[in-house]
Every structure is written in C-alpha cells, then in structure tokens.
Image 1 (cartoon, rainbow, N blue to C red):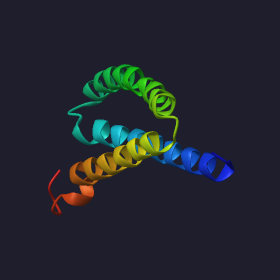
Image 2 (image 1 turned 30 degrees about the horizontal axis):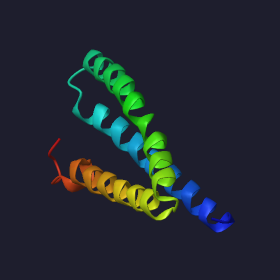
Image 3 (image 1 turned 60 degrees about the horizontal axis):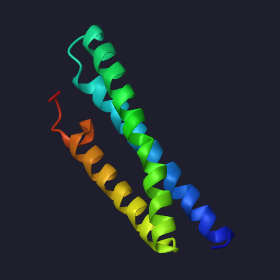
Length: 101
C-alpha cells in the first residue's frame, strides 16, 4: 500500500497501544483501596490485558488478509482509538467534579 500507509498504520497502532496502557495504569492507581489491592489488581489486569492485547495483531492481519485492503483494519484501529479515548475521558479524574475521588 506504500510507505504513507505504513506510516499511518504505525501511528495508529502506537496511539492505540499508548492510550490503552495509560488508561489502564490510571484506572488501577485511581481506584485501588490500598497498595496491596493495587498490586493484586495490577497483576490481574496485566495478565488479562496482555492476553487480550495479543489478539489485536491477529485480528488486524485477519482483516487485511480477508479483504485484501487496508480499509477494514484501519477503520477498526480508528474505532478502537475512539472507544479508548471516550472511555478514558469518561473515567478519568478530569471528568470528575473537584474534590471527588
């Protein structure tokens, strides 16, 4: 598809992964009741998150191979970024009134 498409794929993948990692760490720190609870939740989410995250490249490749075009996988990545951004903004401390934790 050319070097321009490869650049967009790399940017979208990096953006999606970076947002997901940042949101997940923020959620753990924000909602943990104690350091022990944070470590337990962190271990669980890291394990499950890596397992789920490893499916992403498989789906991207499947979409690419089944359609023969970059439209479906790139649309999926863009949709994933929008979902992650919306979820992160809705659950972040920036969306809460001052003084509420």
